[in-house]
Image (cartoon, rainbow, N blue to C red; front, side):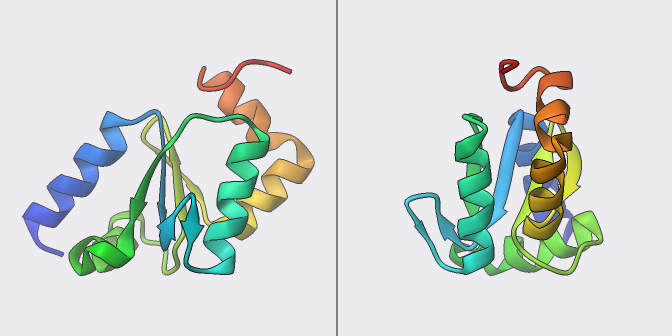
Length: 110
């Protein structure tokens, strides 16, 4: 990954409370995993920024080395890498994701 790509990803992650790197957009996800991640965030009423990795091959490859995580989607909350859609689903079902969002101050309790 080039320094430029790393700096762009770093800026996106640090510049947004919640950011989802995904395939497609929230209105038109391009894979089932991205669709599931969007649905989870919508259930939490979380405000988030999305980045369509299909629009930028540098970001698509760079995000994998940035997080040391091989798959997309990837969720970041307050600069912290949370995981992909499977981890998001497990955390959502256990209540951990809601708690994380509340602890970080990005969604209201309840």
